[in-house]
Length: 111
Image: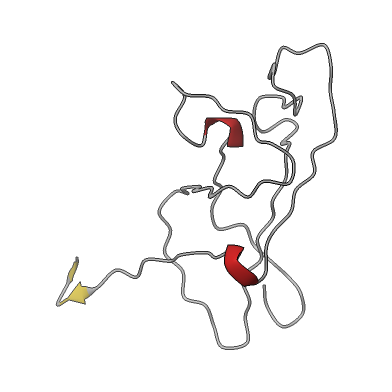
């Protein structure tokens, strides 16, 4: 996001949190419990200019983007739909973080 608040989407990452341990082991999340979630995105290349910030959007739905999410144990084909309660931890023992990996360059090759 630039100094004027303009942002450009650089990458998408999608994960149904129930499948955080793999599609073979769906596990519904319990309210009040903290879970580590790893969301991978496509590879991108961007230089963040001085004064620019990173904007992150987290949602439990993606209408017209990805499969519907009922936010229930039954999943996408459930007759019941409920509102998700998303909590991002900013400190303490459950500090949230974003990890970036910087590629090294040696001559004309990216390592």
